[in-house]
Image 1 (cartoon, rainbow, N blue to C red):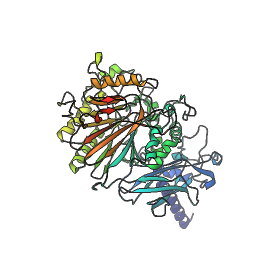
Image 2 (cartoon, one colour):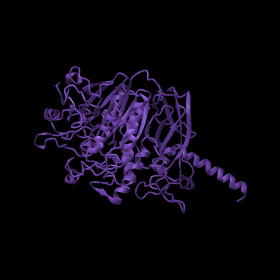
Image 3 (tube, helix red, strand yellow):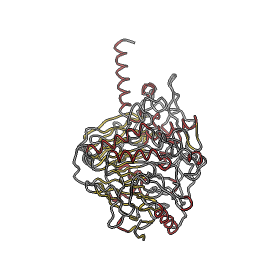
Image 4 (tube, rainbow, N blue to C red):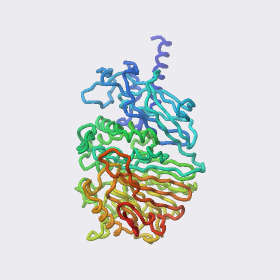
Length: 595
């Protein structure tokens, strides 16, 4: 080959690789981990089949946006070939096939070419950024762009199309966050979700803020998918694959099944999401070294597959190139609040209870011996140090609020009675006592105010003052002595801890007992599935909890169950003269009425 031809080939290869580079799905979650990255040299080397035509591909799973910054946002779609257009081609010699696709299928040598544009107007005429990239089977035909050069706290509209054609995706809407030093002119509204089990019900909770257009951003605290084999009593509500998920193909197929739900698609298309995972994105009660039914090499491969599929399918950023599992990150929304998203499940969690009833499980006695250890951590010491630094920096810079996105219930929760003060769920922060003490100590030492902990996982609603019981005086009637507030939401569709058949009056009786046994717990509900919204202003935060009357049918019906106020500087739930205005529609409210 002449020098000129060699140069031309080198330039062409660089252009092709650059076209893959723009698709961030190839770099998530980390190129430094051989089982979690896609080497672009391998991908570009075997693209000998050319590019799919517009007729050979479809936008199969809508659009999504997420992880908004003041000047950029992640945009997501999936452009996949039709079954008929996928040729059974062999992988070129010397290239390692990466795609864990349908069992027995060959890897196609073709790529799909995707373009995006983002604009300030709905006709998409005032375009502020655009670009193109390839996607292949190596990343399950997912596409992630970072739209850049955007203005703070501004609404944008975006769309994808097949390169060189008018075949387009659905339209999407997104919004950047305020600049870090920006005084925010109005309240910022969030919808907060967790625990969406596809077979157990419809995702009505996702759609209702879309219908109301009531929020700016969505925060998801985990259990976006469930790994179980589907066993639904609702027609056509069992996701693929028809088994528990273990392989990369399994997790991709499960994510794809969930992303066919029209209400979930609508939420992704209208709001920028800020998500984090919990345990079921891998498997039930996962910790750093296993689950109740997978350990050792089986667990390691399972977790790698789950993490890779999650990063491919979710509109999130790669946080750190040198940390393949890091999803913990933070966002500064003007001077109004800092949102700190923790990973208290997958990153470096010490042993938790496995299987059975949380707090007992198959290894309950073993865990019970560990709960008081000083070196026990729910998130790993690297993340702990980062978290405490985030709290201190946020307070020092003068942000009005510190909002903490976390997977599991933070406050102490006991059943009381013959069990006394022993917490009933060691899978929550109650199983990591020293770690929780270190959080409280950081708040106390730094005199850090206005901390609001958001929690999911439990499939029930819990609203509490953050009280360091046994270490600092606390008055349950006035809230004096509290360090902040915890807002813990129920599941989108996942069944109550009491099951789906428990009548409301019986669930409310148990809620009343729980409130009576836990001084910091101000409201609790076990009956409803749903979500909550937060309206965050400089003077106060208002939280509204919504219940879905029936998740077995698609409907936009919802019940405003309870509302709560947190005033700036008070570090407790406001009493007016009692919490929540003294009235709730379900559950039990301390010093209040239900009905």
